[in-house]
Image (cartoon, rainbow over all chains, first blue to last red):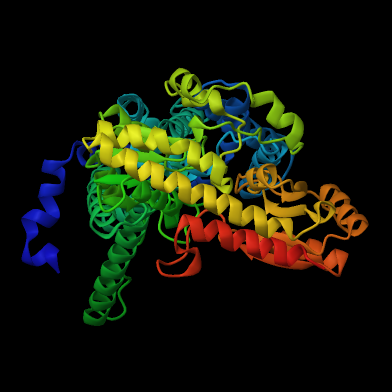
Amino acid sequence: MEFLTDPWSWWVSPFVDNEFMRDALLAGVLTVLTTSLVGTWVVLRGMSFLGDALAHGVLPGIAIAFIIGVDTSIGALVAAGVMVGGISLIRRHSPLPDDTSIGVLFVGFLALAVVIMSSQQASYTGDLNRFLFGSITGLDSSDLVRQAIAAAIAIVGVVVFYRAFLVMTFDESLARMLGLRPGLAQAALLVLLAISIVASFESVGNLLVFAFLIAPPAAASLLARRVPVIMALAVVLGTVATYVGILLSYHHESAAGATMALCSVVIFFLVLTITALRSTLAGRRRPGEPTIDQPVQAAQRP
Amino acid sequence: MVVATTSIWADVTENVACDGLADVQTIVPLGGDPHSFEASLKDRETMEGAALIVANGLLLEESLSDTIDAVEQGGVAVVRVAESVDTLDGGDHDDETDHDDETDHDDETDHDDESEDTHDHAGEDPHVWFDPVRVAQTLPVIADGLVAAGIDRDAVDACVADYTADLEATDATAAAIVDELPVEQRLLVTNHDSLSYFADRYDFEVLGTVIPSPSSLAETNPADLEALATLVEETGVPAIFAETQHTSSDAEALADRVGDVAVVSLLTGTLDEPGTPSGTYVGWLTENARTIVDALTV
């Protein structure tokens, strides 16, 4: 109960006293900024599974880069590119739905990573594990710089492509009619998605990137309908998850990255509970009326 | 305060700073796996506040290594003990040639040359604490670290002298236990690659490993498992050694396949609760030697 009885020393002084706490918070907030802006479109366009697949699909690229001694970010970016290319290849040459082609490549890439790591028999070269969970407890300045650049790219990309993303999300044929080239917009969104994953995996880990990509925008989309408001709310909710997660890891000695990821999911369920209760109460007052706040994307899915 | 990553190195460090010369704290909890332990931000704070960090090194603490590096950059002294001893190659279990390759290493210069860049050590087996003679070789390095952290040189040197004698006695005890076992029965089949240094010290041969890589993403393949099963059958090895902090399902599958083989769990990367026989490094080594020899005695 110290967070109630002595709020200053629970909520604030760890950050005042420790540079690594401020670094962890900064890395977390930069990740949230990037993933909230990109993740809002991922959630609204129903691309969560692709996000998950990409977050894990970068692993074979990291493994190969690790073995041949290239920067792991480059390996991850190449793997993400190959995966996205593979998905659109399957889409062009088969009648299969997208989630099937994503699933096939997801399992293929994950298996490839394991095969590559298993072939490195008994050489103590480290483990891919740390890319799943990152090490927000061991950030250096290059991690922060990389994430700041990714956040800047995400902001610019989302502003530049805002109209294209919006129209593409809600009416693809309208987008084509308006000359907005939905194919290009889709490619831009995938590039932004890949950048947000690759920039963050070494510091906060793939698991946390994926949690922040989905949970805060999903929670925000339950609370608001306009896209810029969803983005702003997602940043706020993600920042709260980061802040609380870092403090819980600090005070209760839990694994840092996973605690933050868990906090963002808990916040999603809190928001879901509140909105569900609200619509139940509203429904009780005005029986017969449709419930408010249908998630925006429900009506838009093909 | 001095911080050690694992309970084994914490106990060794406490003996180098004997009679409470330093308060030693451990990061990876008892029973935890040093390969995959994820640090909390509290652990980071503990490390930041340390006068000295004693780590194993050689990528043993895979998930902690970024944190240790970051703390070191912030000015905290770090001693990576495994880098101060003659190491074995990870891939090669032929201890004779292995050892010959590296006997020309001079401990002192070796450490000085390579402490700058830990990445030079990729490929070396980190589990050096399975050999008490190598552990004794790390004591001067830990002592230097403690003295640099402000502890009295004479007091530390006295501790090192005492503990070196303890470790020599432990080595003699373990050797006496192992002597009960005829040399031709000293065959080890292990779940994960961690007994090479024990084998090197006490003339065991590591016949094979079920999962020959420390990576938790690595898996075994049926051909290797079959070859290992054949080898176990041919040699009549009575026991396969698994580890308490890893799953032993593959080792058990191998035992089922072969039939008349026991799967014996060893405490490998961690000590037991204080007060138990394996609660200190010295007791831990003797217990493991006893368990291994008993399991292999037919």
